Length: 348
Image (cartoon, rainbow, N blue to C red; front, side, top):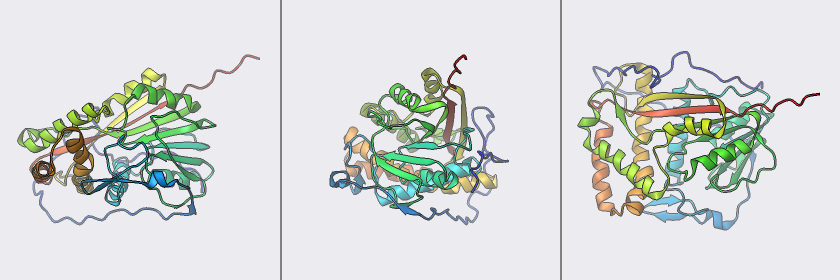
């Protein structure tokens, strides 16, 4: 199978801030829905051996969390969260017309690294599309499937610790890093040090807030409070959830060239009139509803000291506003990529 060139959708969701075009609400927002979700690809071969300590997961308030570097990440790793992560993977792809990446990487790319690989779905699909490349995914949790393409490997590791790779990479990819980084400058320096000259880095992240082009957020007190509490809790934890808009400048500061940033509006429910945006909102509604507990439960209880009764009462208000199609609310997805400069040719 030939390695694909990066694809660009002929019709993409509204890009912000370049366009500043409002998403048009549907005049009949409660018309019948017919959602159909995408499924994961088949797995091909076995991988990974693990120590029992890495599998000694921690349980808290009905959710399961990672054991390796316990407490460093406040999002669960249980089956419920894995399903949400896979759904979000498909939402990202739908947002950019099906592409797995935006950077113009070379078809001959031989080594690919996926930071915070999660379920490994991106790494697996890249390994399928680039069969001649070695694809390595790292994560705090060994939740990836055992049967994967023969050129796909997973390692339990923390990308905020020292990197020990023996050879540099052609392409380093990271997704959903918000809320997991203490030192962005150090992370980008490690990425730079582990890329080949001419190699590319791409980061895909979500803004840790919600937005509207009208007065919808002013009419959504629970959503507004949710955003405020999330930002407060993660900053107190030491890992800011609102970093999506910082990646471009961080790449530039680290010395990357040809840095590009693409920002997309994606509705939180099927309120838009446009059919494609409505479908995206339909998928994203499930993602955001499931992500409410995933991203907020530990931050409210561990960091801000809430009890579960307070949390559940608050969540009920947030959920009600998330499904209200009279509130024209959206999230922002950031796709940022840059290149390490080519090595200077020696003079003969």
